[in-house]
Image (cartoon, rainbow, N blue to C red; front, side, top):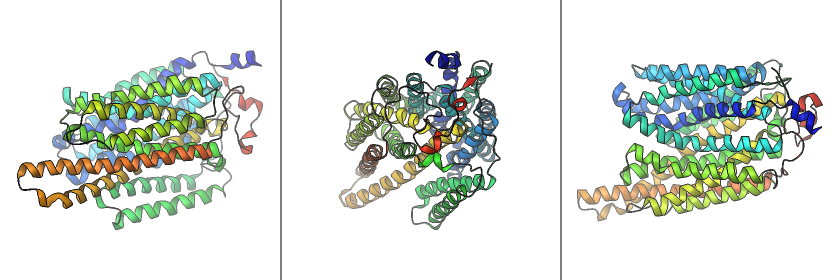
Length: 511
């Protein structure tokens, strides 16, 4: 049997992984690379303060709203084809954005990036899912992929700083074309999709509309909370609307013959627990990125490039956690034995960050926290992504992968708005309480910095609590055993996922 399985493995799978990982890096870093370049783009194109947030929001809305549709398209059209379409479309939209001559052109390009990213991200992860089915190889592949997914945002900060400082803000978009050209060439020559893994059922149009509108409304509602506050009519209207739309979506999935999101994908306790853990972890981590960027540049006076370099220890920690520790232990220990300690280590890192101060030191506070945060998240993301796609029917690999991206995207939107609101409120209260003691311009500037840092510190306490909650979710819901023995694809834990045939369970690669 071992010899038979070995014969079905694509000999080019490890080279394929390099190009899949490159595509994922492109999508993930795009969430932060533009942020650093935004002030330059705003000055160059004359973008108003009111429209500035839309450079980020347009991407997030399209990406978050279309992810489940993108996942199902991947299952139906073929993952390799969807991967290529996503890459080419993302590159074209990036080139359009880089060449933007006005606000509308840039915003339209960012929305197109999000739309094609929603096709590309699920296709990349589902290709990984159906290509690497042997537990030890799967652990290594997901270790690399998980580290890139988690560390890509920090890489985006660094790359954005380099390109903005030494080239031009437009290169934060043009650089995607270079990534995509390499990834497309690799996909054409090295990536082969297993046969018999497509889902040829009709598309669930009602589900696509309800899920897309619900997720987009949720992302937009949380974005508005950051600017308008939680009590504003707009914020509450979009968040309540998203709840209604997503509830209608879930109900519709129990009534249609070919649902967009088969509920068996999310009701499996391990997959559901993994999605929830990823979402909570991303909520906390995005807060760390946002506040540390401001702390380094505004309080410590770092340049965009230096602040980007300052995040590199987190990437190093994540690579160590995901590719060295988690890869070696996942086939030997239950999944929760990695995810729970990982979330706890990341929570401890947030507690260290609560100690930042105006006169603080990067070396004594930020550096150890970033190393711990990266290492802990590496222990969380890699096993979580693995278990979130383990045992799913091959025909559902795309939509299961889309749920991973949805957890990340929604978590990022919630984290940015929730923690920003908390930090801003704490900052305002601190400034108000200490205003009486200020008698000079210098004192006012000092108070402003102290209030900002106080707000960040409060937000880090909340982030530590969210990561503690993530650890509790993983401890309670995740009960997956060490993944040894049978191939992952088609070896689900739930009864519903045991209906595959032997032909479905072991992929056969086309030449």
